[in-house]
Length: 391
Ligand SMILES: *Cc1c(COP(=O)(O)O)cnc(C)c1O
Image (cartoon, rainbow, N blue to C red; front, side, top):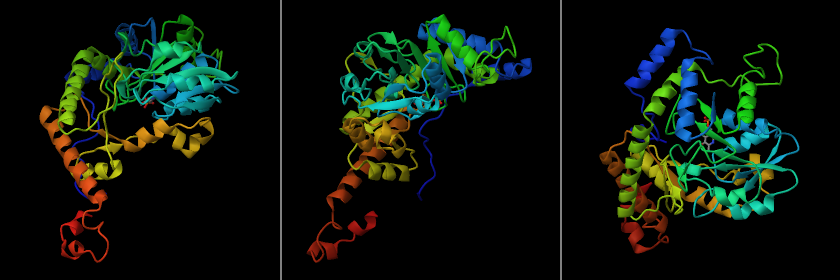
């Protein structure tokens, strides 16, 4: 794509002096690998933040999902129900442990897994549901609990969100967060497993540490990964978690500014259930002619993007589609992300939404045909030069 280079990135982490101080301290201390005081501090801080008894910091959100599945003994011969609209990591993690993901369509009211679609997908092999709090909106956990299956909550995009007053990260038997830099809280790469079960937490620790306990080094009890978070990453994370209210508060302000501006230009944002407290991740908007609108906004140096396709439409996960997932396909085709970060000011939100408004009317004009859409030989066609400039 020619045009301006990106001026306004889709996401950018807010890393300040506190993060620098802690990372420098970690370097000076010599604790740079997957053990160290900042890892312990991060885990305790997250226990308090999420309201959970145990948190294990690991190398990524994807690894956290895989460890959660393994800790529940899920593997070959099992099925795990996963929403059709999500980043692919939950489905990939299920495949990585040898089990089969089964895709459930999403609800048009929440864009999260639709409990009404889950019942039909349950078989004797179903071992768990991975409930993804998509774009900062929690799933309907009371409805999911009715199935009596273990629920793994993927709260990678939902730091600070709530379901009926309960915090994202506390809603699954096991909950998983990501700290990738495009998420609200970052450690560089990183993630965590949160649970109230001491036994699950211990199993995750062993699996993330070569299958052994610190008490018996080299006595491998299981086949494990090296999935530890480094003390350097954890130092960054401790600073971010200490700034949790500031970072999420700023994000919330950006979200409110977006909602006001989007209402002004009559552009729908993602829907929200009455029981959900959404925590803004990336601002999503639904538009006609989505690809053309995104192309035009990007021409202004603004890194808008089409959201990910529904997993049910990817060849890799075709076999996981036991039932059609029309809602996921429809939303995936019409939704775009706008740049979102805690440091955006109101003026930038205004600039982005103006670009969106211009792009939307230009795309609508060109799709309506305008002059180029007129039949050959129409008098306006010969006269028109404005139409030709559009491409
Ligand atoms: C980002 C993300 C992940 C993966 O996290 P990583 O830390 O990037 O591995 C998993 N699930 C969802 C829903 C995500 O958005």
